[in-house]
Length: 381
Image (cartoon, rainbow, N blue to C red):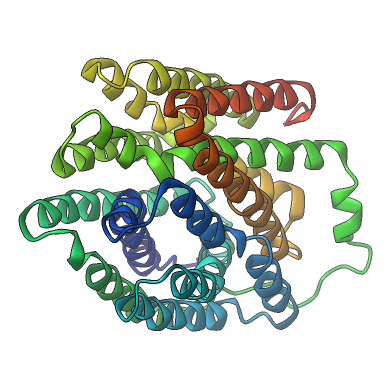
């Protein structure tokens, strides 16, 4: 019987997403605090995401060629923490741009390979993925609430030090995680990567993933600024972020039952439909707390549901032989290209048009994704 290192895998997710929880909701506020305008914030956020287009593919190719994915994860975690410390020294735009590129080149390499590693560990019990991944959401909640309280009490200048500390803890956890056993021999007639990518349903799935993350970018980059415009405190902003992730955790807990009852196609289509509603509510009802909380609870669908469906679809589409490259390609096109384009359009439209317009565009992107998924994705699953 294969023993799954549940707590060690969960620990890495915990600290990885604790970093996200301390970084993503508040970094735009920090950038605004030290003097950057909306255009510059959008551009720096796009740079942060842009390396996802190249970095995961490069490291994914190396991981699949060498079988050393865990070594790559450890290397990426170490240099992410080391390079992030560069934000402590200077506050100029050019310096921040270079540090952002260098840090994110390693930061964006870690998660796709860790997703592949986790799926290899749980391949005999795939439903356990959600139970492991939910600890990332727990880490996010603890970080976003704790950092929100810290910023209200001590000030936002402490943010970089907090992020560095959590990155160091993530690297330390990576040192105690075991490598997953992989098949030593692949069949010579196994399908090639190019053959997989020629399938219409795979191309449609990747396009849907890109649109979903393009829609999420204004949320990740500007949601805290949006709430501040409506006079929400940092603590209340953290609570609203937490509502979304709590809903995501509940979804992960019950995902096994959902997968047993519904197909991946149904889960994906339902999640996309609820995503449209979420962005429409945020665009129109930011000053209505009950509806804003409702929109945050739909994070369970817009991120949680689409992500779990994507992980299972990647495993089915790309198999074990191409899992590293499949995860990397998914990350590059969705979180990378989609996230970069979303950050740029959000940054340029935020002040010239309006925040409400930006979130309505996000709703339109999810509507388009729903149409594509309905026509091509998961019909045989």
